[in-house]
Image (cartoon, rainbow, N blue to C red; front, side, top):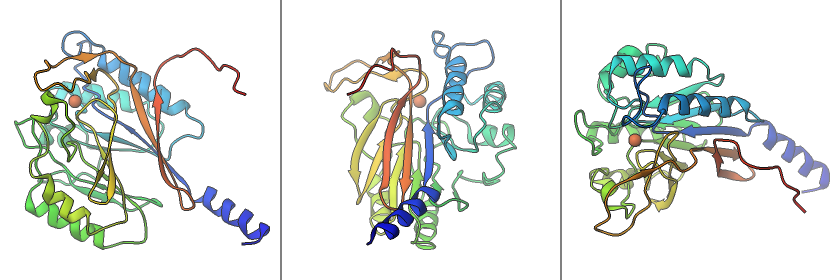
Length: 281
Ligand SMILES: [Fe+2]
């Protein structure tokens, strides 16, 4: 490639790049109530919204990977809608085990891409990267599962366009993370999802929530990552007898930057005020 070609290719890549932010496990409560009676999760989501709005360049899209609210109550979804009204970036959401699929659907009518019935599985085709969402929730339970019809839909959806990278979003990570109190509530039969994903190498990332911590693992030929929470972070304790706990470690979002010449790079962006900028030489 000569210098002029390289410059044009670089320009093309910059033009069709895509920046996708991910936040997760926002656990919104009715206005005036605290998460677990202790933590201002609504205010922390509002801070995350301010953080996302201030990013430069601004993301093209924000993905929310479940546990949008804490108890699936209409008043919680009303509070969520009010906070998200301040987010000046298009956004897509999926439910987590703390959500109630039918209440969510009814209370957030602006999210017209959500199917009217059954699991909230969907695909968004409007961008250089395709967004495919799978609803892993089991009503009334904390573990996750994906039914055979959803897996068949996923297989057909992934096969329909192999020319663009896919971000597959689901709440429950499809792997054991080694933190005992999280692995009790994982995704059932992840090998069934692995069998489908392995047939589609254009799945660039699997984006998950649920564990309130950042993690990465190789999975079925792709990379599965989890997003920190915008509120509490679950304790990183790997002993089999470890008692569960959470900490107010800095909340964060993930930024997935995709360019055709560089692939997808996932960055972690901490939400809050930190000392700096300091000189870098
Ligand atoms: Fe959560």
